[in-house]
Structures are given as C-alpha cells and as structure tokens.
Amino acid sequence: MANENVYDPSLTLDEIVFENRNKEYGAYDLRHQYPRLLTKSFIVGTALFLIAALSPFIYLTIKRLTAPPKQEVKADLVEILQEDKIIEQPKEKEPPPPPPPPKEEKIEVIQNVVPEPVKAPKIETPPPPISKQLETTTGLTNQEGVKAPAYTPPPPPPSTGTRASTAEVKPQVSDTQVYTEVEQTAEFPGGINAFRKKVGENFDTSAIEGADGVVKGEVTFVVERDGSITDVKVTGSNSDFNSEAVRTVKSIKNKWAPAKINGQSVRYRYRLPLAMQPPE
Image (cartoon, rainbow, N blue to C red):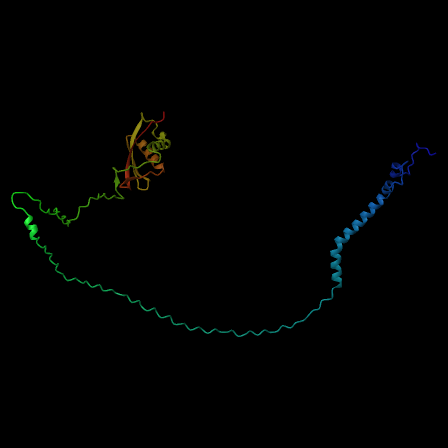
C-alpha cells in the first residue's frame, strides 16, 4: 500500500483532482486533452486569418507574374487635313409685311327732322236735348253748377344768377418768416419740464460762481420747421450766465415738434424764462 502522506512531484493537476475517482467517466479525458486541442485550434485559426489577410496580395503577385509582356505599338502621326470652312451666305432680308389696311370709321349722320305741326281737331260739345233744357228752372233758387278745376300757378323760372361761394380762404404760410403766434405751438419731447430738466443737468453753475443770489434771464430761440434749434439768445444782467445758458441750450440735440399753422410746419420763436442758483 502506498503512503498517502508522501507527495509525488511528478503528478499533474488532473491526476491530483481525479485521484481516487473514476477516470473512465470522460471528464478526466477531456481535461487531459484540452491543452493540446487549444494549441491546435489557435494554430489553425491563426493560419486561416493569415491566409485571408494575405490572399489579396498573393492574388496580385500571381497576376503580375503571369501577365503577358506589354507590346509597344509604334503609330505614325497622320497629318490631318483641315476641311474648308463653309461660308454661310447671308440671308436675304425678307421684306416687311404690308401694314394692315386702315379701318374705315363709320360716321353716322343724324338728321334733325322737325315734324310738321298738325292742327289739333276741335272738339265740339253738342248742346243738350230740348227735354233737358226744359227741366232747368229759372228764378231765385240757387243751383249747383259744374265746378272748375283748381288753378295751380306755374313754377317760377330758374334764376340765371350764380350763388356766391362761401368757401373759407385760408391765409398762405411762409417758409422763411418767424412766427410768434401760431395755431399749434412747438413742443419738446416730454414737455417743457423735460427741457428745463436737461438745461439744469447740463448747466455749469461754476460759470456764475460768486454771483449774489439767484441769477435770472430770458432765453429765446427759433424752432425750425424740421425741429432743430437756431438763433439762441439770452437776455440777462449777468454776462457769464448768458454765455453759459446759450452753450447749454445749443448742446441739447433733441428735436422739437415744430409749430403749425393750417397744418403746415412753420418757424416759431420760443421764449423761456431761466433762473439759476450759484454754488455756495
């Protein structure tokens, strides 16, 4: 009996796993042959892959080796004769078609035929018979007679005079005259308070530094027909205030809505009192 405690280094892993087991079952045989089958399969698969990958190159090499030698053909150039150009003869101009015949205008002659006057036959009323005449009574008794139709006076003839026109004639508006009285005054966008605010924001009060109290003046300028401002003038006792006010008003580039007369834009002189407090 072999000693089970002694390890035999020559034993494989399969023999150790299937020790004391039925090796005829089939699993031992499969595990024993698996490494050889795996190696054989790898070699066969690699060979097939190489054959598939190299087959185009092998085919081209074989085709190039088996191809017949090229034959060079020497061809002499043949001079090509140019054909004579066909000169097209100019086509004769066809005569223009004759103009259409003028249309005959039919003129209808209307004759004024005045009918001859025909005398109207006189209608005679026969006298009443004698029997009717004898029935009439004479004396003071009132008798109803035949009523005559009511008289209607003819309409008056139409007057030949022309009626006087009552259309209102509007005065003409000048493009160059500066107006002081208009139907619609010039307006600044946002109103006159918005204009005063812009003047106050742009006015440099350091120009009137040292003045006593509030400095006042009157600004006049012309609002043109396109809404721009021209001819800016300031009247006041302080010359520095006047100069700064003129500069400030000219620096405001917003367009005004022009004044209007009869719906037409006109030049308008605008007057605006102005007062500023010098810095302390």
